[in-house]
Length: 123
Image 1: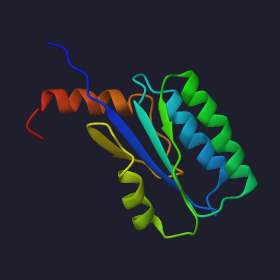
Image 2: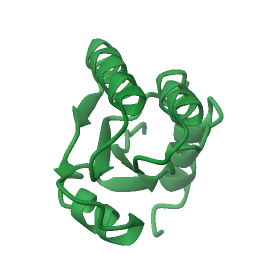
Image 3: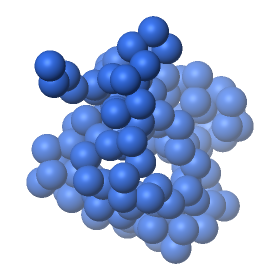
Image 4: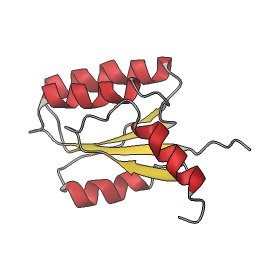
């Protein structure tokens, strides 16, 4: 019996985050062996032009890859904890996978998570 598990990746980005690492982090989602179903990217207050440019680029790439992309924005910086609490309300998939704006996921991250959850149904 084969089944699929749906994942929302939840990320928060802040104006002082590295645009280089942020770009690499989002790119690592597009290179997954098993793509995420949804990416929720919370903008925690106003962002730099370079971060905004990266968000614009990846919103198009996620759409082209059939990944649902949601980009809620906070008017003022609230901090990571509150930004994530806000972002969770937009996550609609069975599991939420947390990722920092500078995390690079190995290509098999989503696939391994899915396999683990299927094999350990009581978790």
